[in-house]
Length: 167
Image (cartoon, rainbow, N blue to C red; front, side, top):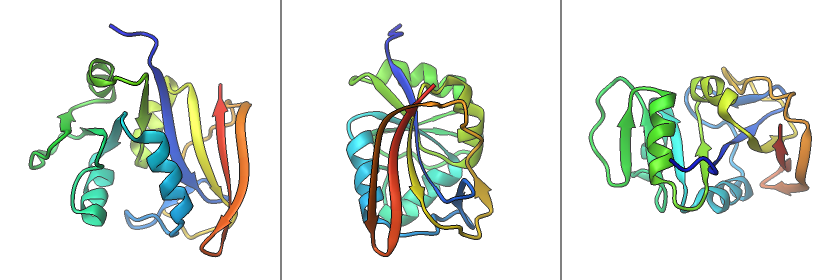
């Protein structure tokens, strides 16, 4: 078993740690989608059922160029490069076997972020400098104190800060 694989989360949050409303991301920031793609391309991504279904709704297919692992106890139709498992632990076990580039990403939603945070060493976070009426939130990440990257930017009318934090 490869133990040198880095376990990360990647997320976009508002000023209240909001991540979604009615199973959708409440902002449209192309640079954030580009950041997400650059960081996760070629890697294993782990997500919950609702996140997977929202990606299918948005793209019409699973995230391309990545191995998608979906944590769900509800059967979903099979898709290319997609695996279905029952738990976070099963997802990590499978992810460690399939990851070729040394980093696994948790990509949502709220329950996955909450239950996986104890495994996460690195956090890629896009801070959207606004408050939205979100109904879904990212857990407290105040123990990620080491900042290894930070860049302020703006896109599509939104001020954002891209950060990479570690415990």
